[in-house]
Amino acid sequence: MNIPFLDLKAVNAQYRDELIKAATRVIDSGWYIQGQEVKAFEQEFADYCGTCFCVGVGNGLDALILTLRAWKELKKLKDGDEVMVPANTYIATILAITENRLIPLLVEPDPRTYNLSPARMKQAITSKTRAVIPVHLYGRLADMPDIREIALRHDLLVLEDAAQAHGASLNGRKAGNWGHAAGFSFYPGKNIGALGDAGAITTSDEELAQTIRALGNYGSLKKYKNLYKGLNSRIDEIQAAFLRIKLKYLDKEIEARRNVARTYLENISNSLIILPKWEKEEQHVFHLFVVRCTMRDSLQAYLHRQGVKTLIHYPVPPHLQKAYSDLQDLKLPLTKKIHKEVLSLPISPLIQQKEVNQITGFLNEFCKMEKRWIKKV
Ligand SMILES: *Cc1c(COP(=O)(O)O)cnc(C)c1O
Image (cartoon, rainbow, N blue to C red; front, top):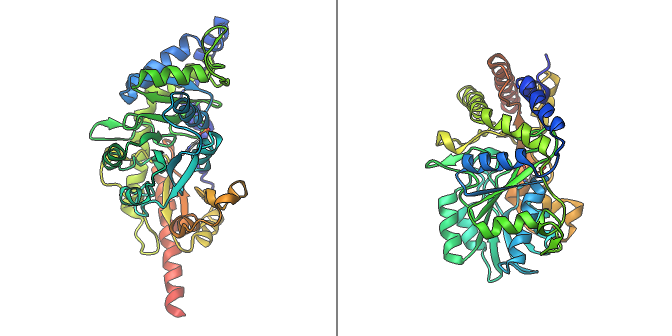
């Protein structure tokens, strides 16, 4: 047996004819950067998220970097200001903060949801905290109503890291439309992926959208008129054309992911495994299906022997990476524990019900064996 973690080739093969048609259209247009495809995709993605604006950029990391940078240009942030962030996020969130000479304020997550905990958020705010980046990790929307409330009371800017949560929503309001701005990634493996790098920012703040747009285009909105010391970070026309196709099928793919999650949740039954929490249908898009197990490494080895590919998101927390040796003394026991225990099971719009059942069977079997063993000693 061989069950891949995610078969990207098969995902894109579903739309092969449409993708080829789109690529041909762009090739034949003679216009490859900042054209009609990007403009149309930005409009379509803003409409999808429910925001007034969307600005396409080179990738998800740039989306976060450019938003914080724009707030600096607009004098809403300055060097040395603190930006709160859940400590268990993917390192890109934190890179965006330090790249802007801002200080990351790492907070332990809610171990039930893996997202920023409003209670801990409240406790962690200092006199220097000016912004917060809630991350909708694994595709589950963070507790945005409470986070917004606290941010409002403490005058914090809110930047959603929505790189894993396209389409997640609460009370009908989508990821990307809760903060002052949101960063998205269209990295190929995300729930809506380009065939290369791409990212975007959504916001309903026009001044912010314009500033980000300028910053990603050499600091310029009008040719040869440079307002800022900008950089170059844009979506290619060809990627925008691909993304317009993928966006049409996003909701259908999310539904397929939810069906896989439902099967896992109904059939994995073991006290050794902690399952993801899913209270409201709309709040989770299951970019990843992450379980926790204190015997994670042997569980992963067991599944690999059965031909089931799993991944770990993420094996080492950012504050224990060499790049952040300045943060290594932080005491974040929960974050450390989460990184030791999480395991991502295969999930995709195309995985077969039969395969999901097989994986579930292996998991339950592993637990039965381990329990028998524990009883003996
Ligand atoms: C993927 C990801 C990013 C970075 O996106 P790229 O497009 O790869 O630069 C940022 N934050 C989170 C949570 C991500 O999962």
